[in-house]
Image 1 (cartoon, rainbow, N blue to C red):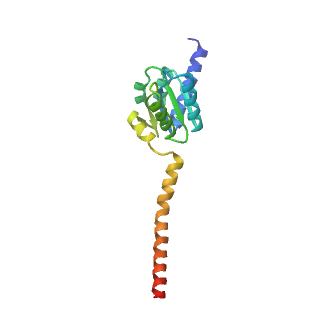
Image 2: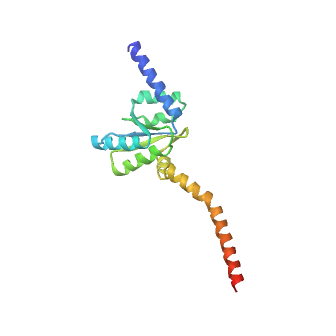
Image 3: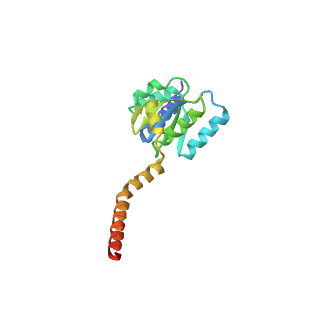
Length: 168
């Protein structure tokens, strides 16, 4: 192998390793058997969620995982491997890939990394069931508003009770 090729592969390993380290989540899947239309729709859905999908050689993935101290991933790099990287939303790749895997039998989720921890398919499916970032924020807001809302209802009830007592 020429020095230029070795340097190019070393650079690819570095780039993929950095993606593993800097991503909120990375999900590894086997896209073998998808039609061109299905693959295009998957890529589009992932892109809309801010997720980058890359098909990468297993040897590069293996070396990148070792460099990122995620050696447990190496068992997943069998057969064709595509990795969905998300820098911001840890749930987005899981949610989109799970949705497509439910619709398309050929798509197989192998595992991944969420918040720096190697996870299996079961855990990815659990993350996929969570609402998106906006849904979680609205749930949090609703929880935070509940005490204020309940206090307002109590004040209103006391006020109405006093008005009824004054009228009687």
